[in-house]
Structure formats: C-alpha cells, structure tokens
Image 1 (spheres, rainbow, N blue to C red):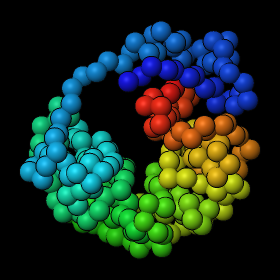
Image 2: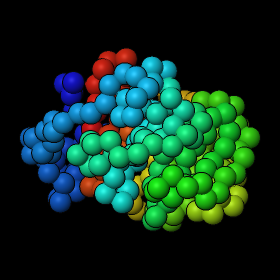
Image 3: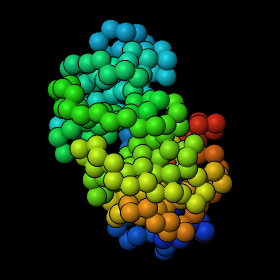
Length: 239
C-alpha cells in the first residue's frame, strides 16, 4: 500500500523539498500521486509456465522488445510475458538475482558471482565470472550504457561494457549496497554502510551528495528527479 509519499529534490539533499524547490516540469503531490493506478497482476505460486517459485518468488524484472522478463529465482529460470501479462516463454538460467535490458539484449546478475547476456529469445550470448559472495551485489546499466555492479563486501563498483569486458573498479567512500540505480543525467545512486543514499558519477566520482536512507532501498530514479524508495519494514513505497 502507498500510504506515505516523501518527495526528494536531488539538488538539495539536506532539506525537505517544497513546491518552489522542485523542477517546474514535475507535477506537484496530487497530480503525481494520482497519475498511477493499479492496472493488473499476473502469476501465482508454483512451477508451471507463468508461475513463480516459492523461494523469493519473482526476484527481478526488466522490460524490453515490448515484453516483460522476470527472474524466477525459485524455479531457476527466466520467464517472458507480454506487456499484458500473458505467458510467452521461459528458459533455464540458474539462480536469477537481477535483470536489466539494454539495446537488444537481456543482462542477468547470477549469485554468487557472474554476469550473463541473453538474446530476447533465450539464447546465451556471453557470460563473465564476477568474484562476489551470494547476495552481496547489485547491478544496473547506467546512462553511458555501462554495467555497474555494486559489490557490498568489497565496497566497490565494478564496471563492465555491454560485451561483459571488465573496464574498471571504483572504490566507494562509505560502502555500497545492492540497490544501485541509474539516473538519466550521468549518475548512479545506492545505499551506503552509513545508512545513507549516495550519488556517484558514472565514472566513479563521489559527488558528496548524501541523504538519510532510514533503512530504505532505492527502486527507481524518475526522469523528473524523484527518488522512489522501498521501506520494507513499514510496507511503504516512498517518492
């Protein structure tokens, strides 16, 4: 249930944003909140096509080629659905932690350590080993079309190109969580060991931007500048 909306202006992380401080193109509270309505749901517990396994259920989701790709962790597979939620196909993929789409490929983060690149039809195009413990990493694709993998145990961001070639390791100042997310203007955001959100450039520079996370995790950076977070203990989505 969305029972609390917290608005965050990225240019001023230390103050509660006011309408005057927000971008003029961004809707104010009522119109932004009312723009989203429940549409439909799909899936159920099980191992048949279109169902999701008990262990963690649908773990990750990505949209591409007018289709929905779901990381079905419990059944160790990737499932493909239409945009209306109709089952299309699935293929074995091992344990699936996260999925991302870029151009014409689907990228998978595989615990305890690895990256895979798939076609939209389930053909394995490439894979790369990444030395990380299980559940100690997050993955996103930044605005420069680089794969950013946050490795919490080592407090670094590992960067790969779309061919899964390793490009760089970027140490973080205060550690990095699994919830790394990109913005359209050349930054990535993630939680730190200091119970804060941090903003780094795609090239790994710490911008100094911080905001208390209060135990939340980042779900999405809206193009208008809002940070959408998940407060799991309070059963809330915050914007």
